[in-house]
Length: 189
Length: 159
Image 1 (cartoon, rainbow over the protein chains, first blue to last red):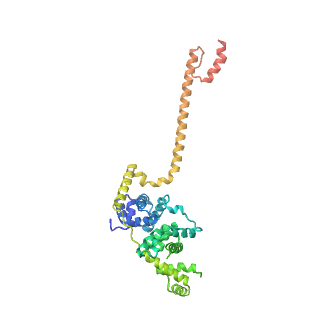
Image 2 (cartoon, rainbow over the protein chains, first blue to last red):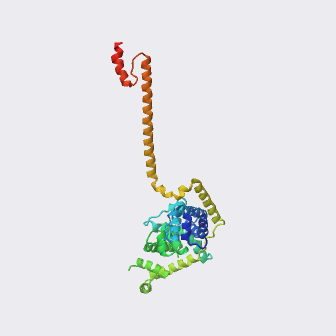
Image 3 (cartoon, rainbow over the protein chains, first blue to last red):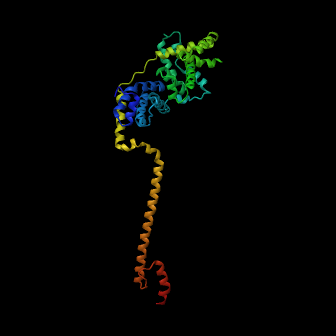
């Protein structure tokens, strides 16, 4: 079972093999959890997302079309579930963004982020900035955040990210450029 | 090309996704454009930060919790029956099935109602017949309520 590909496992699951599901859970929980924590900034919510994702994988296993990359299929479910479950909770809803007010929002969010690591008296460390980067991620608009997490944390190729986000590679590039520009502003690099 | 358009090139270049010609053109632009050179440096700095971010540690027993929740779901599914899971494609036909059941219900209801009306009418005929016989009106054995009315108005008046 452990040596089987994800595609074989999802097919076996579609035929009612419960062990296949167990193997998929063991194999993918960590990456789903990592994505969800970074996406929502909430560990407890990320656990709920993991559980909901695997329930959907179980329910939709028969709809999986062989030939479609499993990771793309899985992360499409992960993203949609994260959007659904995170919607009622996050501050991001308060700051729901249109392209037009994105710049204002980023400037506002930059002012609201903790500034202590930028004061000269503080012991400035690279690690602290990295932690701040994770907080800043939460201030990005949803699409930019998703593209950034998939690219820089999950190290997905552009084509796969485009598949997950149901868009084109050039749109993903454009999202990543805007995300990076926003993060530079937020972190005041 | 405006500086905005070079930004995507910078991103691709840092990913190692530019061919030699495009890379040469970008290098030339970076030499002459301070703004884009600064942006490229900041993008690199940001990439460094991404690589330094710690991995969120997986909460203990998360996979066990998920497997346990899934086992319950699978058990509930088997209680609901194999039909619901493996013939799930019937879901697409649900409106048609509901419609067919409704039509069938209406037809059966109408048939039952018609049968019931028939039997009530037959019973009413017999009882009128008996009543009229008892009252001394001569009614034919095979008469219908309509015949009794005629009998009543013509023959009954002569007696």
